[in-house]
Length: 381
Image (cartoon, rainbow, N blue to C red; front, side, top):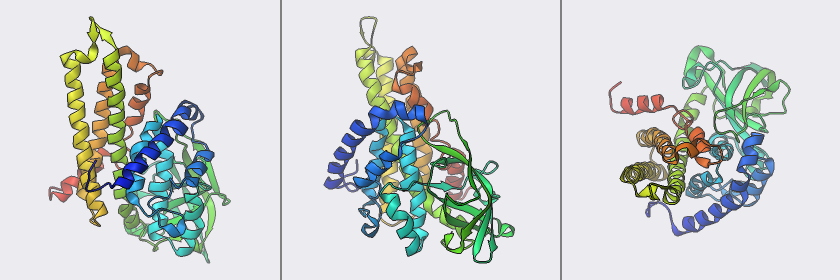
């Protein structure tokens, strides 16, 4: 890790959170994968320990240390289920930051305090059935009705969406303006007109509660507007850097964990009279994987360092997201190959990792969008 970035207190916290993940989360991974969600009690337990609020200001119950949260995102991959990290991450790193940065004091007190305590669970609702990367084309509408807003539309692929208590919701408030006509709202899910139409069945991240949502004449008060009217698109773009950094560090840490487990296996598995790790072709696989992981780690820490210095490292973050997501997929694929037929069996974690890693080049901004951002910043398109 970067000595200029993480301090001794982060090393101490790393060991603490690692023990928590290995002792209190990892043993239940199979159970939660089967259930399709992380129990609420886990959010409450992590909230009570202060693990959900590390980057948030102290006045809302946080620790005011963004790097401590980043340590959590690195270590939570040890829980043996990416879906667990996804639900926790969607709550603290994707949804609630919108309230932290753009909410009124009233909104912050109402949502952040119980959110950081783990008593309420949040989600970010942007993606729609016909709209993914093209955020400007969302169709969900929010129309004024006196002092209230009336919302109609639908969302899909929403992490925590099937059981959230409140959501940060993107809707068109001025359709003629396209991306300049989007606003953000913070909405209680007990509002009449809100419905979870489907809990989605996924290839990976199976412990994550992912929902398809519908809004039918859902009335929310005027003070549900989050930030400025018609500035939602810019608010969304402003939040992407942290989300993509968390995904990048998770990809690096997940790839490292997969390599470590596979190396242990390769040292124990014998063929032709010796451990398969001693065969040159296998040893070179490990050399290549270790090199790619370290490249991803340094690229991500470089972007994180710029972010912590107050810069807006869109280019570096996009590069980290692009490289690390694809790298993690390549690493787990190679690891599965080393396991051979056993890697295709669900009794080994590498099979789950193979499914889980595949979302990284898609979620939080696809590889194609990352390449578009990078090439534009190079002045090419």
